[in-house]
Image 1 (tube, one colour):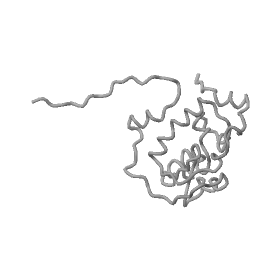
Image 2 (cartoon, one colour):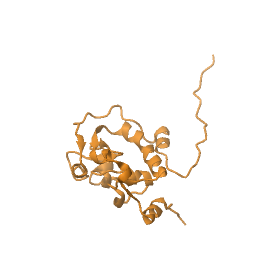
Image 3 (tube, one colour):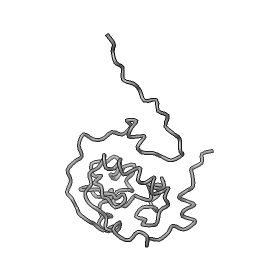
Length: 166
């Protein structure tokens, strides 16, 4: 009479100093909803249109990551007027997530990002895809991105600065 006990994962997670949203999801801190809500599709929209769907829009709240527009309306505690990420609603958040900087000055910034910032932002894509329905694309991302401005040395320094707690 041998009872099988599920093995616990003992795989050591490497510490790289970068935030990995996948680890939060896999550790059960965040779970995929049973099904994503069906939302009205918007097709391709401009940044000005996206900006109308901010935290103050009671009917609908949207955000963009790498040009994919997600409907975050149902996440009122995160993206509503009093939400912890209320400033993200109505904006492209790619550079914020890529740099880990939540300052609003990095919202809607269409610039040449470093490989590190791109990789970090890409780590969030699967999280958003499992949590929020896609509802369109942001026209700005269809442009030739190689022609986007470079970040200044001061901006890069600020984005790459680590928080040091003493």
